[in-house]
Image (cartoon, rainbow, N blue to C red; front, side, top):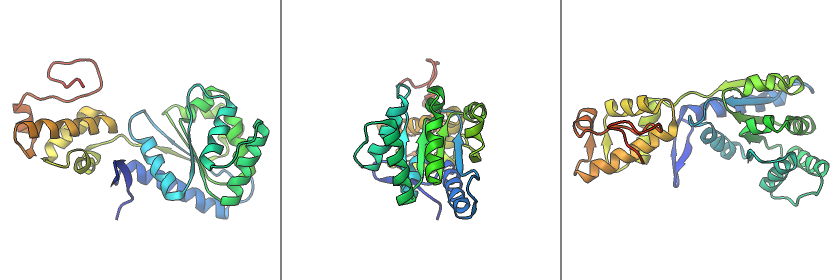
Length: 254
């Protein structure tokens, strides 16, 4: 049975970026058990926005009981540390050194990994040293999640970059993912493979665009009394696809 991740209210679905993220974290745990002190143990999942990286990271968090922080663009170093402590559910120290120490102790005591989502904001805030400190203290797997330029940006941080063992490019969503998501976003109708492929093509790798279009196909199919929808019928209804771009004749604008 393939690994699965939540995609809606109480639902689950296997997606390929989930498998990539899980494999990377599993590998990090294996290396943790074998490596000597000083060897790299962080992993990086990176790629364009919208293709399901955070989605995959969320399931990895659930599967491995990882601590998880999604960094905001306005956060300071102390804000980042405070958010991690809040996720750990322990009382917060007042100083950055105190926060760093208690996070390190919690990671050591529990052996649980840490996932830092939106790592690009950490780089922009010149705050990568705090993540490096946590890794050096605890030596538990840490997964970094960010945009496609994250590896290049981390290369400029040599002391940090050499601690990353595995660089995992997230994959664009495709027709296979659309087929997996269809029962969750269009559960009341059946969508043909050719229409799913067209949905994926217009989505240009975006998981969210696929989801929006699947929901729309279900809604508009039911409005005309159809429980099965294929590409020929959809085109014949003069329906297009939402691409997230500007208004184009025949496309859906939410």
